[in-house]
Length: 136
Image (cartoon, rainbow, N blue to C red):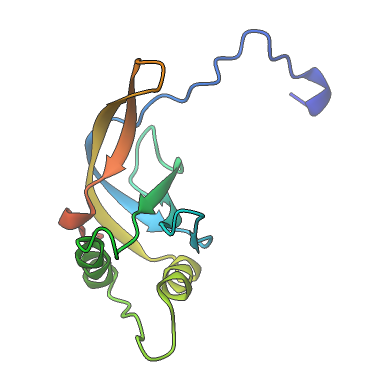
C-alpha cells in the first residue's frame, strides 16, 4: 500500500490498549521537561508478543510537588545499571543517555481509568516504575 492508496473512512483512530502484565521496556531518546514541569520520556515494548515495538510515553510529575518521583527514577537507575552522574548531567540528559544506550528494564503495566471532562470513562496504560527491575 502506497501513500496514494490510503483510505481513512473506515479507520478507527483508537489504539488497542496494551494488555496489563509484566513487560520489558526499552528507553528511547527524546526525554524532555514539558510545560507543566513534568518529565516526559518515550519507551517501547521490548518483550516478545503482539505489542513488541509499541511506543508509550511516560510522564513523571514535578518532583517539587510529588517527591516520590525521585524514588521511581532511582528504581530505573538500579534496573538499567547506568548511573546518573549528578555532577555533570541533568535528569533529561541522563534519560536521553539511557535511550542512546538502548537501556532496558522490566516492570508491570496496569490500566488506570479516569473520567474525561465529558464524564466518560477512559482507560490508559501506566507503568509501575516503583516495581522496575533489570531486564532479563
